[in-house]
Image (spheres, helix red, strand yellow):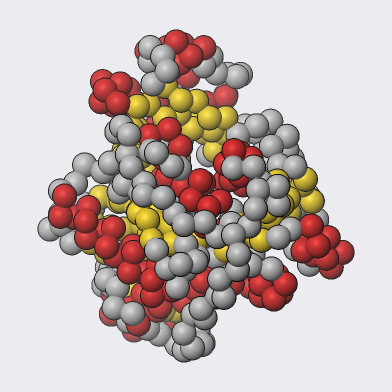
Length: 402
């Protein structure tokens, strides 16, 4: 499976010394200023914590929610010093942060998750090789780091296949399906001969995910398994709990817990799975942060993924998570705003419709502007309409929800 690539150090993930519980009134640092950071700040405030977000310059969803926002490049030394001086512990809302910066922060402050965890998860080659080395099931894959690897990789994986860049890919960017060597060569050139993973293409699969939290005492908590529906490689809709058998659900949660324990994770980890028609689970990707598929936990569970991110960071014992009601979450994308601001007024008539907008002022196609969560019997009643809304993003569909 593994190809020619500089391997991650074989040393074990270090055990972090357990500090005292961080008291309310302290300032928690967040790397990133997007919507995941916004929702973390909202949760932190409910627990009595202040927040300090550091991210690149630009309009931020965290504006008006975080207590302080620092807009500066990751390489800015003054920003680093100010951030570390004002925060007592640090988490992140995105994993594409320079490992050197994370390591320097971890030398000064508790960091959740550790820089080593992020180092593995932010690169598909390192991530796939780590999963394979520790015995977690994945689809067939091969690593490409040079033109000489193309034929051997194709022979190992077969066609059709998916070529994915090792880093920098999100929402379908940095990946393409190939059917023969000619298409593989063209895709490799399109990606500028960057390190890539060639993965087996799986037909007739379902995609599910498990958000898992682990505290500094080694205890883990799993949220309900989510079933994810994508459109144009972007998550369109999540059904929670997933429409799968109890045994598959238990196995997915067990895999997620084992991965967290093997990494000695502190914080959140989302494990994305492929579920084959034979009910075989294969690990697709890892995300060491809150996840889009976990947004329904805000309204449908006793504690949200952001609650547990706050509690793990502040060294609390994690509560048992209970699902209060089933739910469907729909991403609201920029194209929903094509004809102006949508009319969300009909949704306010029913408390089972939970609208979350991210405070973004510019709507672009594919940009996540917010999400809608529908609870209980209404999730089932309007499932077909919600799926149409998720896939087509037509504002007139909002009128049929009442």
